[in-house]
Image (cartoon, rainbow, N blue to C red; front, top):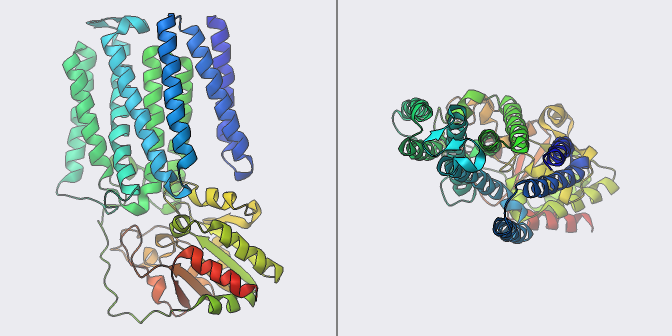
Length: 466
């Protein structure tokens, strides 16, 4: 049976790798999800059959799967696309908490995992257990804070206090010392001290991170959850958990690095919880000394867009909140019938998690070849007659290039200001998630279209049909 389980684990690992490969492109993402689900199904069945548990244990496992699967199904069927980022953060927290529980089970019942007996656990197992425990606890509390910020239950602004980084560094050193002492002694008291300290450290690492940087945080927490699973996999001797955790950990870390590079940020700041917080929240500066904004109507926008040669649509979180992706595609289809070239510009951190805008546009059946990333699309803004910005605030803010006091300074942005005309769809003049006023609002080539993104775009569609 052990040989069959090993072969099943190998097949599941291959399917997980194919899943990651499929998820790297919108056209193959659905297939990638299917590979992942099949692989997980194989892994669960193989683990249960190879466990040697009695009938009572089997019933408990099946009951747990049924309860958890039912809850997951209900949540997935009811969740709105706009709530996906906070859902992902919440699920990451559960992965971290699961690692903590498994570590506790291994600590108090080591004979069940073949790593020793209470009071005499193998040193290597204690090290693996403590690492999985610490990373899992950090993942849990950090993901809870990310969830609260993304869900609007906690301010998205960085929460800063004096000597914050020194405190985090000191707690990190203390955590390392506790791990060393735990490996040397196997003390249950030290075990729980590690858990409590790691829970607190996860909280402190995430609260100073501003809203504009949350997509990278979600990606990094995904990586943390993978490493926590891998650490626990070593403890309980489960090869598939090691492989799966390493895949998740490595892919999340690589994605975080790519996003940091795209935002001109340091990956070290992400790891240390200082991402985006060096300058704190940039002062809005007020609008008193600026020229008044130009407000237009959907009819004005429809007339200009209908007579344009090239239009670039820039979607953001505002489009997600309004669920406007379907009507945006409808508007694009009408414009293309008039001979207008339409494309979409996606910033790496548009929305609240990596790929958020890509998912929404795919849901609306926007052709994949019309969707372009920042580096690819930026040179084309100078050739565009119109940039239609629908709820994308921080990622279009020219202050990122010029204002060194800004929380988003140095972040590459979509160069929408270079278009001949910029239509900016927004409910009001409030700053973006990073708490920074958008200079683009006051540019002479910008026309504000105030209102709900879906309603404004619907009115543009109606005007185009006349």
